[in-house]
Length: 72
Image (cartoon, rainbow, N blue to C red; front, side, top):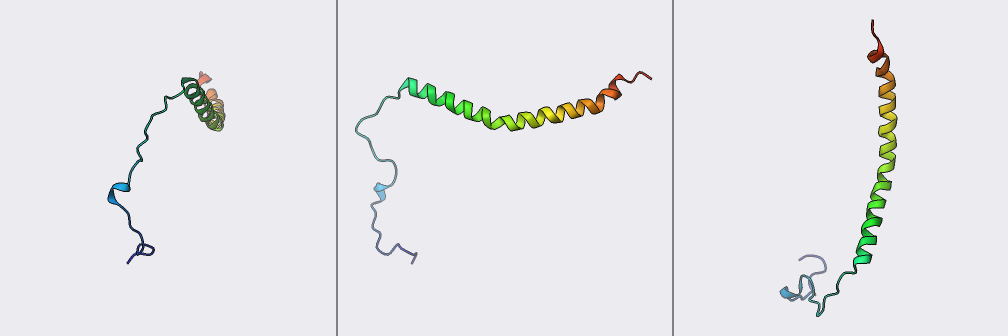
């Protein structure tokens, strides 16, 4: 017998979401503000990656620019 299951009695129909007698309408202003905050947070998380890519690109261009400008 599984641990802790000896005294558990559940109705099979008790699983799942509980029904709500009414439904709240979403506040459009709140939803818009939440979306803006979420996008802003995601963009801030990408800042270190953007800086790393910029550094890598600058180093790469410095290395290949003499090769590209060499007209021997």
